[in-house]
Image (tube, rainbow, N blue to C red; front, side, top):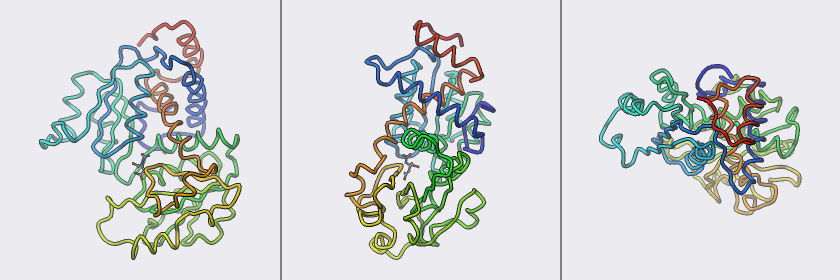
Length: 320
Ligand code: NCD
């Protein structure tokens, strides 16, 4: 992988993505052991800095770092000096005093992770910056789908919903198309960003034709990012765009990054159906984030496979 940070899927080539997915597969073996820990990052510090609500991303980054034996500091904006008005730059400078190997940051501001990457010598991982990007979500989605389908080349994915406010959609389009999938984004015209085709996808304003999709990827309505009114009502939105048992054809797979608004973008019946990969996506979060931390912090490179194998086999810490 190029560089010390993961801010955007654009930082990754197809070969980089494949390297991370393969590494995640090797960590999946560790995850089914009774003792799910390897000593790879022993003695190194990882700071999780979350300025926005998170359940899955923050818990899986924490677990990923702990399973690699790193020391973990979790900072949430509520209850920290961020509440007292400390700026992002001052916060990052303060945390740098601990000499962290990595800073994982989630922020409501697009571009925040890129700034932290410039201010800090640590590896910076973007865990979601406003409506810009969420690269580890895209990686875990690609990983989940590859595990289920084997190859991804030519797989048709429809990403449906509030594309405009969705960092998941942006990173997802980039990652899925880079892996050879054909990606269509679909939603009301008010919720599709102008020029989104440039990311490498088709655009549709209605669900007509969705039966061609192998995978339907539904997005949450990002009410917290909406300043005006983008849809007449959630009821009307659901009538036109909700994926329910009628619209999900047999054989199609269903994905969603969570949290789900049941009854808005998805009907309860499809969330709980065996066609849904939503629980698997959460499960993948831990091993994929372990793989990202591993690749960034150990420098990756061709010899890491054997180094990793030696670590896990001998239980020896890896030289920093
Ligand atoms: C997403 C996020 O926060 O961007 N959630 C997640 O990380 N799994 C999607 C969302 O909030 O809708």
